[in-house]
Image (cartoon, rainbow, N blue to C red; front, side):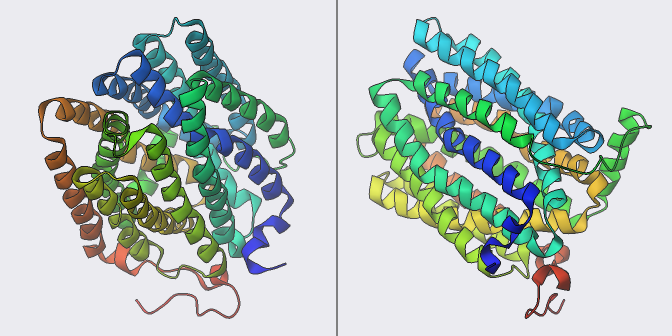
Length: 416
């Protein structure tokens, strides 16, 4: 089997990949549907920021518990159970929109439920991947998941924009609930060994152990601190200001925003094809350089939000982001013990997400009280500076890969 698809040799990964691909198809449409559902009720960026902040706050509150549970219980079962909760919350949103009874507080409340569920799903999903494949196939497995995510991101936002404009956002949410329902029995086909950590210790003891694993790795917490700032900018400038500009600036428009987000997905897609073939010998070095490119679409969004120009910038940023995403996951999975991996991922996610509510609320306020162009230009400059400054940390710059992960014909760790 060719190197790019080597991870598909593993039966468990094949079933997991199928379930993830199905949920990614509609998941890539959901953020656009929710954004414009909120803006239809109240065309105010602060209302959108409130709903997004509700999801994120709930996610943050439950993330650490999600990591502990994912290291104790069967990870596939955790994902299945949370999908049931998601079907209920997303289905209720759709019903409220169909009936015309949806309000901002109700959507925010349902976003809280969805955010809590996601807090348990994410650490379980990241922890499960090394259990499904071999060390040599780990980069290919992560690249294939990224490929599926980006492939659906290309078409998903375009379809979502068309469906939202013609039929309304509720139909997008219905399709998402159906996809989650299909994924549940498919995940039942994933056969895993018993959890490596079956309990016997207190919740807070497990959290302390996870913290020790997290804080003892300089490269890990440095990147997380950087992403505290970068994610706040991303969610605010791209997630709040972007849809607001799309709805109110004819140079972009709702459909144009769908094309821009899809272009970002295309950049991810093409980069994943590269990463399926060629191993990342310096995953964090090239990853943070890749992340710095997101400053380009932020600048274009502020200076001249024309569809074609912004789509090109988003394409470049997507490619850069995928280098980081794949590199970060293999660095984590190769350097953190498997029985503590979900907990460490939960600390990573907590640190990266904790300022997202602040970002959404601050940018919602900035758009209504400041010049949007100035806000976005400064956002791009700060974003690039933070990403590149992380490279000054030696363990980030020098992080390599074990020889067995690079496979035959590669020299493994480069000189440090």
